[in-house]
Image 1: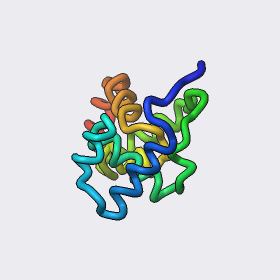
Image 2 (image 1 turned 180 degrees about the vertical axis):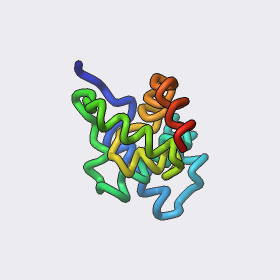
Image 3 (image 1 turned 90 degrees about the vertical axis):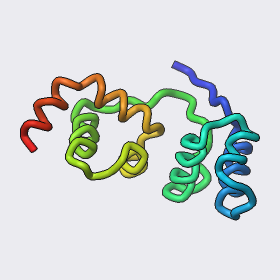
Image 4 (image 1 turned 90 degrees about the horizontal axis):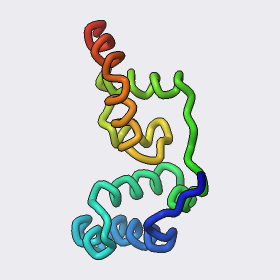
Length: 116
C-alpha cells in the first residue's frame, strides 16, 4: 500500500534545524508548519537518533512481527519509558503505532500488569 507524507522532507528538515538551533519555540515552529508539537518532537528525536534520512518519506507501511509488537508492549507496560521514548528505542515511525498496539492487546495488557 503506497503512502504520501503530509510534510515534505525539506519542510521537516528545516523545522528540525530551526528547533535545534533555537531559532524559534517548538510551538511556533509547529504552528507555522501546521503540525503538532508532538510531531515536531518526534522528528527531532528521529533526526538525532538516525540522522536526516529518518525524515524522508516512506513509500510503504512498515510491517512488524507479533514477537516484536509484544516486546514493545512489554517494555511500555513494565515502565521502561514513555511512548515517545520507546518509539525511538525500537525504531517505530510513530508513537501512535505503539499506543494502538497497547490498546488492541488490552487483554494481554491486563494479564501482564497482574504479573508485575
